[in-house]
Length: 296
Image 1 (tube, rainbow, N blue to C red):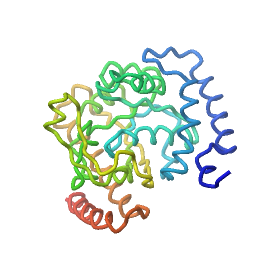
Image 2: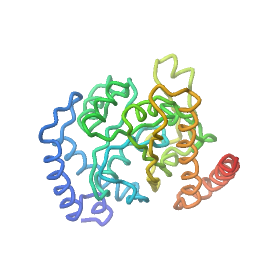
Image 3: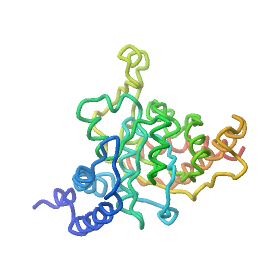
Image 4: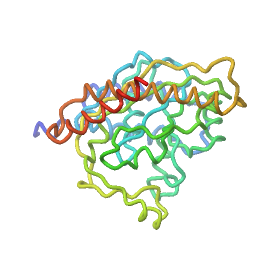
């Protein structure tokens, strides 16, 4: 068999690892009834398809795995890459690479569950409509959730705005306060280069009632190397409550946003080569801008 093709097949080592992970998960979820359709069998099948792509196509590297403890988190990440592959790759990393495998329940926008087929598959592998009641239910049942506080704005960036964080919303932090659930900051570097030249037709998106309408030079994601950085846990301050003032909440949300910005600066500096003649001038400009903002 051609060596290139072999790279995209599940290795015996990963096959064994997935078997072990799902033995553990079946015990973990044996008494759990999921109201959104999460299904371990579908999740396992998906892992066997996605892991070779994770390994060979995107060549994912994960840093900071030691920061994942065996507890419930609100995993908070930058949103990047035009399509939500970043969430999928983060989810695989937490299942495949962590010492304590954990299913992340990504909070998704309302349009995704309404899509034929994709909406059902997303729910079966763990996605949850991102409203407050759903988040609270998941946390109450020991689930870790994955949130992108930039929302759709995070993956609706034109090329000059790549890796520039949009202001974080505060809703996830109100839930963290109510449930006293720690934040685990995550940064993804490399997903923007999957679609290196993008323009968003916002008026057309509005006309079609779509969250975004990207026009890209390529219609299939390029094999950009992906790096995932997992930061240290951010505890919820004891003196803050769910009803705390917007000012107090905003300060803590900004701290999380600022933490992820610093992780991005580091990640961009250590980015692996990929179309360097085009990428480096853009990355240099972005790193310089981030440094100036982080130092303020």
